[in-house]
Length: 74
Image 1 (cartoon, rainbow, N blue to C red):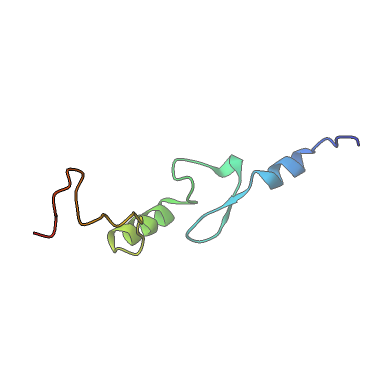
Image 2: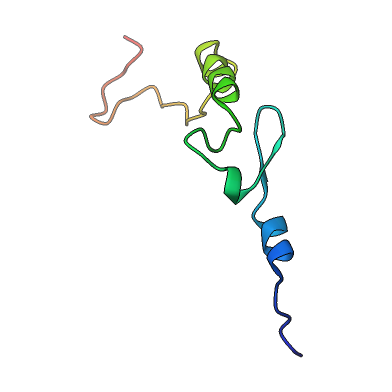
């Protein structure tokens, strides 16, 4: 089985990502200080979503005892 050589167009297709806010395509050539967002606006929209509590980072719910075995419900 022969390995095909990728053309520049093939490589550019593989290197395209999308802005998580507006879904605009971002190529490696257009990646800048706002990456993974396409613009300052999309970056700020995302930041505002964090501030509004729309995003959360889940974590394990702790047991009712701490590491020393003390009851935390008292």
